[in-house]
Length: 128
Image (cartoon, rainbow, N blue to C red; front, top):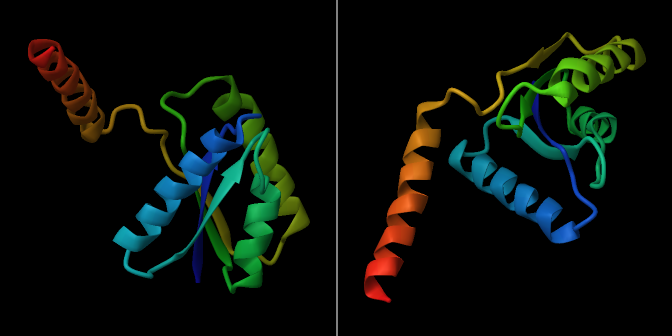
């Protein structure tokens, strides 16, 4: 069974962490109960990637797909995430596979989202 760990940076502002959890719950709803899904955090939020993967494993996951909730490949995805993945594999040899997807950068929906935000702001300006 596949478990998906959505991996976000995390924040000391808990409402920011909760915003990630809300998106992850919506993602799970859109995937119609398919894979197991857990929001995980690098720092500032709980659970950590390790803790989230352990929760997924407790629910039966033997394969993990990590989806970075980051816009671009920066230091955290180049340095920190590979180290965490190595730790996961060493701590849980029973995992059949751990895969990391691309970050959000380059996805066509990003341009649509930015255009929608800009259009909404322009519409507010006209209405004011």
